[in-house]
Length: 230
Image (cartoon, rainbow, N blue to C red; front, side, top):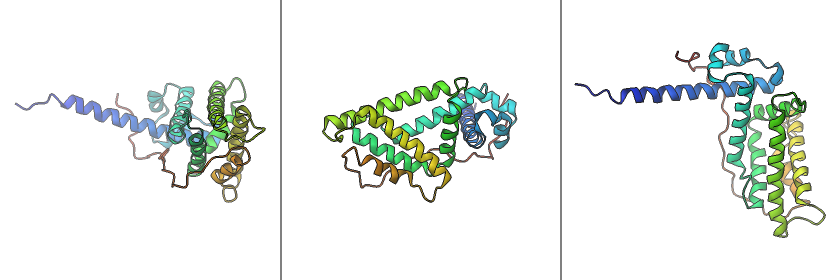
């Protein structure tokens, strides 16, 4: 008699992998659509079409448009944290990570476009991402201020600058550089400009070693099967 005890488990693993691959393709397509059209104008039908499925098939994976937006934003933040040790006790490592993230974002224009588009749209209190951006700015500002606080204790923060002011300034610089870069990518080097902007108020040694590349988002795979198994 043939032992078939492991077949259902293998099949479940295969189905899970296929489902996860489809979810990732949907997230990639949603990122592209939201970046190009904005959240309000970007439609679930357009996203579904990009991955070769129906709108009903997409809703099998994400219950509604808000849930899809939340998943896209969470994915972006998870991948960014792989690059920036934002909660590190080493303040210099946090700043180096921010420069590294700026360099890597230059290879992901869709991510930059999405962030810039949504952060502007979400200033409206009724936007689904409004609370997300409030939390994100508070979290980022707090952790960058803490990084500068560690540098201040080490005597590396220049006179006249406080950790809180430095954090607000750096976030403003990063957001502004992204907008300028989207308009002219040949003129603006986000990483280099950010590194230069740190110089007037903090004293750190920039790591000369090559920065490791973190693979973030890939283009949607049109070859994925469209509809989930019923």
